[in-house]
Length: 91
Length: 91
Image 1 (tube, rainbow over the protein chains, first blue to last red):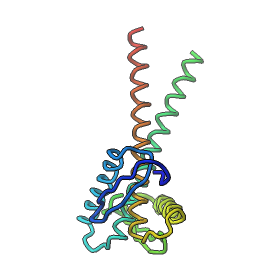
Image 2 (spheres, one colour):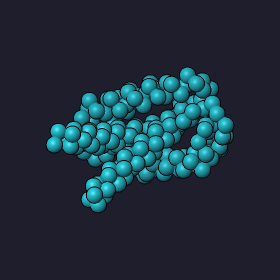
Image 3 (spheres, rainbow over the protein chains, first blue to last red):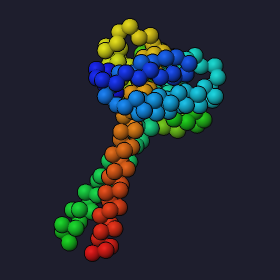
Image 4 (cartoon, chains in turn orange, brown):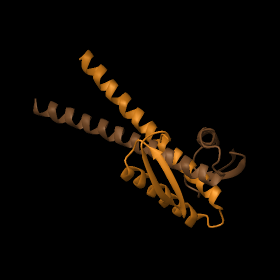
């Protein structure tokens, strides 16, 4: 999320305010932030002794893991399309 | 990332140690963690006054935003495949 453009949106994530500056709509920023807030609360439920910094870092790790998993699925889908197209050309 | 299975991997993210328990390989956990560490350092470069908690939360927000963007692309790709298949069936 770029920090250099038009929209300034203030959101509450896990009890702290963040002003996020970017080119996405305020609605989108609020939606993304609420997903992060939700994930922090989920991880807190599972590990009540974690301080907020560790909770936030683990939330980032968790989200990055989901991202890489989705990226793998996306690349598999793309290569299966490519294979189908190559097959059709050779048929 | 599940906290209930076999591998225990200790990683350093932004100067703190985290023991991550999960079913992914230690190599995968280290790779994910190094991407989070890298993103935290990037955001720190752009906003040097942020404390570590805010930095980690913004890293999670940033990664969540990337995830949603990729999810959109993935769904668009899937629906374009579906449209092609429907078209081939009707031809």
